[in-house]
Image (tube, rainbow, N blue to C red; front, top):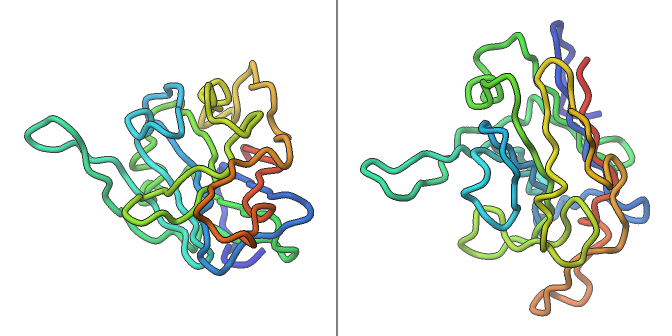
Length: 204
């Protein structure tokens, strides 16, 4: 696993695995995104008002984005908090992304922004549609290819215990080849590389 350094402490680990016939894309043709809500609410991947933070991998860098309320209201802005490559890596077979955060390190974005005992999360893959922080959905947790009611597959996580029960119907294995077809993308777009196969959250 590249990009990760040995540490001591209490950790929370996120694994995102793609279709066994595919592999993580390193050409920047799409994004792999982990959405978080510090409010521990149901996350609808197409509604940015339902999540407060997200990690985006573009094939080169893992970046943390935080939702910052406008002053004065209404509305909010997405702010790039920074690069988190040191906490993330891709497996040697190029099929799995792993993100590891040390719960004992107060200086990291995870502990600064997800500071409640419980948070919620969701996973989505997308294209790199111009002007969009996340792009247009290719695959999300749960049965596709539509994104209707995907909020039912929100994962609720306790920082000390991991994913809370009851689990969503498709956790931790996600249906394969249930992606959304986007007509204006090239016909050779590698959908299997953005087809979510497995998501796992573990406390260590």
